[in-house]
Structures are given as structure tokens and as C-alpha cells.
Length: 456
Image 1 (tube, rainbow, N blue to C red):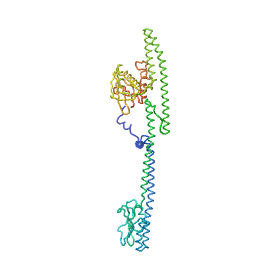
Image 2: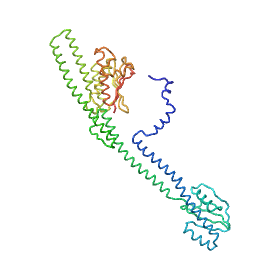
Image 3: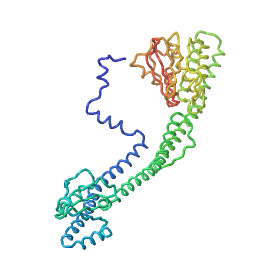
Image 4: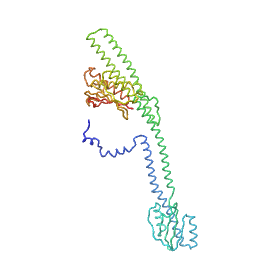
């Protein structure tokens, strides 16, 4: 039954190699919708990461180096030109250069730079510009990125003074980079939204198929279900409809056949009862009457088992009222019974079938115990109806075998001591016909507990 505290950790501990897999499974979505979206989004995100990395590492870096090289080349060209121009020509050169190159040149004769910076200092565009100035200007210089938000100030030390150059930041980097990123992210969001809409429609069709299958498994009518969705989902829905029609035809044929069998078996039994009634009273005749009565009970039990309740339509039923009716009938038959349950609990049930199931369970409990406890415990997935007794119970190894048709723990054929072995079989058939189940376990009252689960 219950394990010892020493054995319990060893029973539930997972092997070390399985733990990473379990963590991955926990992180993955459980629904088909979530997993489908993950399948669509994961390649899209990976594609964006790869494209962005290639763009930034290759394209953007190449563009920045070419732009910086162009600026450094123009500065070098002006410096070389200054060496062959006189003062008037230099003034004209500095006046015309802003319109041609967008660079502002200022000559400060006799000035000397206090410090130089030929290495990267933190700005993303300083590295390519430093490399370009080192390659094309080849003179000492200083770069100021912080004094002006719109321009980069470059001061070059020349033999006769300092040449100050104001470089617009647009000349050093391309603004289309951010436009590319925005377009990429925006288009991904649009594609993601479209994928969600399409996947929701496909998953909705699958959910309706699952709901129809679940309802049919609980014995409910699914006459208005229609195939919809993708071709594979429609194929599965069509197969479900064919299966539903086949099962319903089998149920109808079995019911019609058993109706004829019932009539054929009851007719000779009725004749035998009438013949025995005309023979008078005698010990041998009384034994025959007893045998006929037993045969009648056996025939009724056989027919109940074979007929089931497949043709009964499920209706909204108050479980509290149904349990009270079953308890009243049982007490009228002499059962000492205690009832406990919710005051109001509606369920969609085959009313007569559930009453027959509970009657069989109460009959078994009464046969083997002196008192019976009937309890209803509502839960998340439905309700558990418990039937407890204080009898000898059933060994754990036989609690599943007793559900076999015609199996009896008492090997004698005396109907008074154990019936014919169909009560629990019929009860479980009713439970599973509602989508639930019937199990046996040890009762806290000392005997046997029958747990009937009915889904909501």
C-alpha cells in the first residue's frame, strides 16, 4: 500500500541523463496551436538573427569603412592641395569645399595640437575613421566626437598650423541600416499575425473534432458535427463519422435482436409458470417453481448485460436527486445506508443506466456488509461516487478479475450467495459508456470501496 519514507525518494528520483530532456519538454508548449506557432516563429527568428549578423558584420561594416575612407581621402586631398596653393587659393578652396563635399575646413596657422588620438575611443564610427585617417592622411590628428551632436571634429597637425575639419555624421554612417531593421521586424510581426490567424482556424477544426469524439465517447448525440479545416482534418472527421454510424448501427441491430430474444425466452417461461400453477402444491413442484424463478432472473440479467443502455438519451440530471432516489429504494429493500453528497450537482447522464449501476453496487455492498455508505465527491474532472461497506472486502489481486462477465468469487451456483456474476460487469459498462470508469479499492470502513467516476 504506502511505501516507507526511505524507499520513496528512490522511487520518484529521475536518472541524471533524463533531466535535460524533461526540462526541454516543460519549456515546450503542450497545445498544437502553441507548437505550430513555435515551428513557424523559430525559423523566422533564426533567419533574422543570421541576416542581422551578416548585415552588421559584413554590409554595414563595409559601408562605414568606405564612407570613412571617402572622408579621409578628401581631407588628404585638401592637405596635398594646400601644399601647392598660395594663401588666396587656400581661402577659395576652403570656401568652395563645403558645397562640394559637405566638409567645413578651417585653417589655424601657428597652432599646435596638445594631444593626439589615433586609436578607438568608444564611438561605433570612430574605428573605421581612425583606420582611414591613418591610411590616407598619415599625419598626427585628433578626433572629437562629443563636442557637437551633428558633426565630428577632426584636427590635423600640419607644419604651419592646424587644419580643423567639421565632418557631418551622415557622411560616416548610413541611416538606411535602421530602416532595414525596422522593415525586417515589421514584416516579421505581420507574418506572425497572419500565421496566428491561419493556425487558429486549423486548430479550431481539430478542437471541434476532439469535442465531438469526447461527446460520442460519453454517449451524447453529435448529430450536428460537420467536417471542416484542412484536408487531413476533414479526412479524420469523415472517418469519425463513419465510425459513429457503424457503432450506432451495431447498437440498433443488437437492441432489435435482443428484443426478439427476450420475447422468445419469456414466452416459454410464462407457459411453464402457468403449467406449474395448475399442478397444485407439492415439494417437487415447489422446486420446479424455484428453478423457473431462478431461470427468469438469469434471463433478465443476461438481457440487461447484453442490452446495456446504449439507446437511452442522456439528459440533464440533478445528481443529488438521483442519489436520494437510489438511497430511498435501497432503504425500502432493507439496506442500512448513509448518504452524503452535494446539495445540487447537474450532470448529463443516462438516468436509468446510472440508477441500475448504483443499484448493482448497493446490492453487492448489502450482500457482503451490514451497513453501506453512499458518498458523492465533486472534483475538477467530474464527480466520484463512493460505495463503501464494512464487509470482508475483496483481495487486491481479484479486484480487476471480478469485472469479467459471469465471474464469481463464490464458486457455487447459488444465486442467493452471489448472483450470476454480471452486476459489476454491467456497472462498469454503464460507467465507461458515460466516459468514466468503475474501480475497486480498500474502504476506510473496513470492507470494499467501489469508486464510480462520472465526467462533467
